[in-house]
Image (cartoon, rainbow, N blue to C red; front, side, top):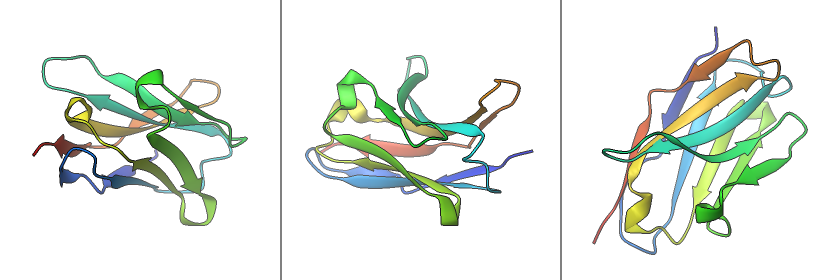
Length: 117
């Protein structure tokens, strides 16, 4: 069982920045793809970014150049640095851990990000 705990959400003005953190309960990054997803009110959950065991990252087009996923293996923590935030980035952000063979899939509890003036 893997536990994921997100933190770092909050209220920020348009153009501002936030850094989300996702602390995993163990050293899992060598066999799990870590990802950030988000769900806005009335919409389906969508992928934001992933980082695989080799360290390769992927960001969806809507956040490219503004958001960056990274990880600290020593701290068992994944980050999502969010810059130039827009009101449309408002959502609950979830951390996900998916084992590379897809047999296990874990979610955090989510953290609210609100972008508003």
